[in-house]
Picture 1 (cartoon, one colour):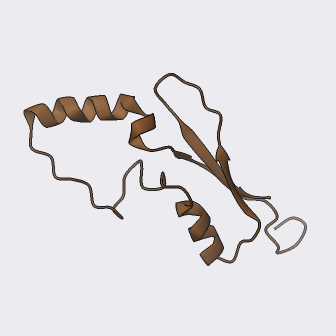
Picture 2 (cartoon, rainbow, N blue to C red):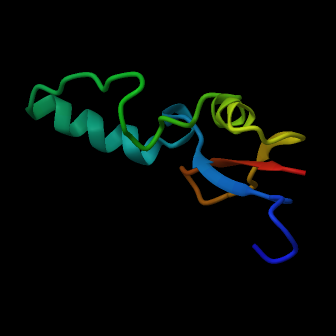
Length: 88
């Protein structure tokens, strides 16, 4: 890595929960009205897997990263929201 082996800054974005992203829940409700859908597994893959506060922070900490912060990503597309997790 440039500058040595130390990771100095990592950032990633994740969708906020479905309650803040109605564009997905509206579509899923329409599909569920016509077909039986199994509930998603809590730890299974999916677009909201990382939406819970501190979920990704805990993964970063377990990987040995420090000075971890989460913040609102400021995305203001109507019906969509995300948060950002990273190291300082």
